[in-house]
Image 1: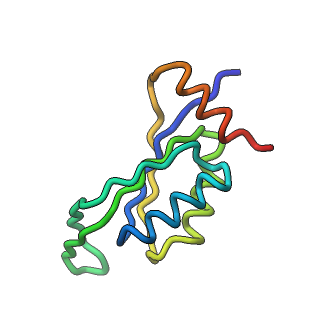
Image 2: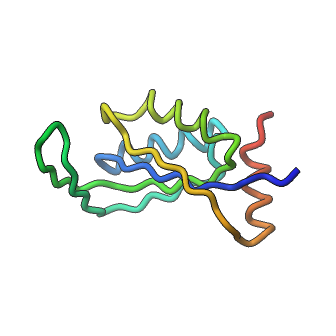
Length: 108
């Protein structure tokens, strides 16, 4: 059976929370790797007010089967009341890298 691989995006308010969340996702085997992209700017409406924030973006590599648990863990540990957590299926990638993702997030 072939796994469907996903990239999960999650914005964080600062580097410290991004680092903590990334480490938790990898340690829990919900993500094989989490890249932290600092210095993004987000513009959005929250509770009727236009907001502008400096944030960090997490890019978590995982399998579709692990997304529900990853999402649940992130929601529980994230400092935002309503965190951005979106999963994008990957259409293709280096087969060996994708296999590595699968081996890292496979439940033990």
